[in-house]
Amino acid sequence: MNKVLIIDDDKAVLNYLSILLMQSGEYQPVTLSDSCKSYDMLQNEKFDLLLLDMDMPKVNGLDILKFIFDNKIEINTVVLTGVEDVELAVSAMKLGAHDYITKPADQQYLLKVMSIAIERGNLSKDKSKVSNGKTELEYNQSAFSDIITSNPKIIKLFHFVEKLAQTNNTILIWGESGTGKELFANAIHKISSRSKKAFIAVNAGVFANELFASEFFGHAKGAFTGADANKKGLLEEADGGTLFLDEIGELALQIQVKLLRFLQEGEFFRVGSTKNQRADVRIIAATNKDLFEEIKKGNFRKDLFYRLNMNSIYLPPLREREGDVEVLSYYFLKKFSELNNKSITKISSAVLDLLNNYSFPGNVRELMNIINSATIIETSNELHKKSLPQYFLQNFSLSDEVSAKDLKTLKEIEAQHIKKILIYTKNNRTRCAQILGISRVNLIAKIKSYSLDKEN
Image (cartoon, rainbow, N blue to C red; front, side):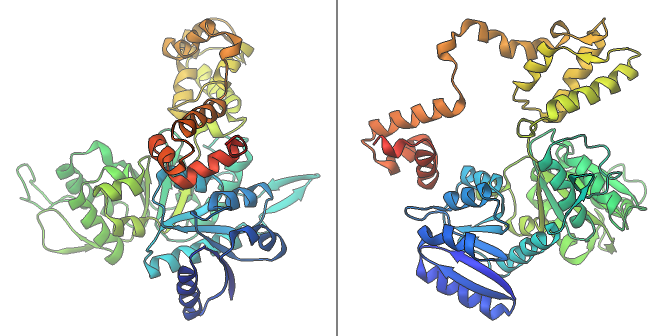
């Protein structure tokens, strides 16, 4: 049986979860209502999974996640909390949480998420080997050959993705635009048992909703003006293979209903037809939207989200992939130099400094376009600052007007701003959190992080 640690200051919740897990017959629950004792317990005992509340006095959920992260404790965590806060959810995911579920949670969904999280932990064990005195992660290098990286986090992600690929489960890929969601989807297809069948990628956001239904499900002859013959849709074209749906958050609600039916039953109807069609297709969906927020707004179906999110992959933005800007820059330089019949082999230190100090809102795709543009303009064998796009250079033009004493990190600016609001609210943390637009739990975490509690 899997040993599960449950940390929550609400004893009624602990009793409920304890009974639920014992009745499942698969879990051995260990409950803890005093979160201050969590550090010792996590260090001295082995658990297969942690169910963690966020809003607790003294030691909150983020404190515990940070402790696990900093001390490299091997445990997968599912956050189960009454706090609905997107920023808090993102912070939890960045600190290694497998999933973020708000109370009250559907029992079957919670058990499914727990099962996947434990499976993920089992797959990640024994994932490395020692070769020539160096630790190298084992993964299918040919499948990931289009994803250029030297970042350890991304390489670890390869290993996890490889294991997911060997199942037939639906996968949801999260990440900002330009992070490589389609590349990862293609890698999953290459590794899977469906690799010899079709991989079809479609951006759900580029079709009008009526057109998407026809493209996705196909249509029958006479379904609408111009429908002169039966037409196969993407589902039939991808039969036996993989269908990648990018920008899934753009789908209209009426299309979401039909997609959900296909995911549940494996069947669908062509537009204008009453005849059942079936297809064996693995769906990989991707989004750069916050689907939790879209569900709250009524723009995305919760049941479809649960069905798509059986396995979840988060792709970090380029600004969080330390070392990859330079690696990718040289990769794109070689690629576009050859494409444009240039002999550029170097990137000046001034250019690299600018690239490494840029936030890349468009991520890898934006970096690719910057290097491509600069390669076309550059006339020497080294990429210089003058060849970079004007919009990119303008991001740094204001730096000449700023004195050295004005240069502060974002953390310093944030800490100063929080301090001002605390003074304004006379240290009323609830009011301060409301003004800042964050949860009280997140505010308390930031106060501790910046040692502001010692000043008030």
